[in-house]
Length: 241
Length: 71
Ligand SMILES: [Zn+2]
Image (cartoon, each protein chain N blue to C red):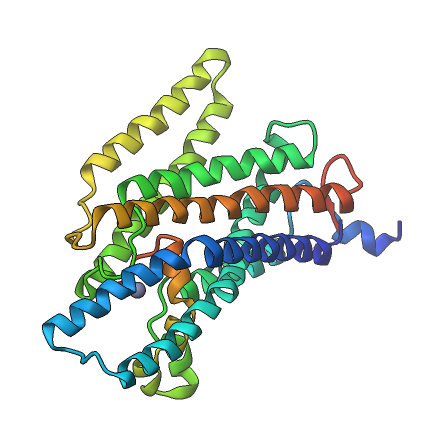
């Protein structure tokens, strides 16, 4: 496969999966964002920070439309980013991934990445709708969340390499090692410092649809890149020229 | 296969330049959607960008939906 084709199919599969993610979010996450921002506005009126006037709502509507229309575009940008990471990891690990063909290999990798760099960090630091977060703690929360993702992602690589060196049943030691490290990280990392002031069922429903959205990305990116790879790579071992 | 093709052909591992390019796309895209607070437009717009937060507003809903820390 030519290098330019490799880059093109990685970016294309990321963009397609991101488009799906953005569209799914637009359909199922936006109603919850509207609800949460509605509560936020009521809080602003109650505290006297804003007044419940026509001007307020006119301004609100204009930037909400901007924010909502961004959902799909931001999905594509995020898709290009995560798709690039996925493409790099797939290209580096393809020869040792289990699976009959490129599609099953790519799907296998997307499941691993979905669990390790999304689902496990999410369990510790779940998504929150607007009104929950405190603007003062956003940097701290970003550092905590990224650290958990980095620890989980890097340990998968380390334990995966370790498992390659072990034989037979000893391979499970690597899996146990990863699980153990994740439990320690989970317990040791500080909790999200923000208090949840929004109604808990709104927060929980928001989290549920948020997981559906991100999962649609990972499901899509694996199938798409696998499909492109199968179509464009004609050599048994990947060759770049 | 010509001689020059043979030289540039590598088996198994993707070319470092392609990996580097994709790594840049990854870092840049993740920053825009997940973390930008006006930094990117400040390059051309100056300090106003931090007030206007164009990119932040545009990526705002995805930021919440994808689980990134926000407000
Ligand atoms: Zn927000």
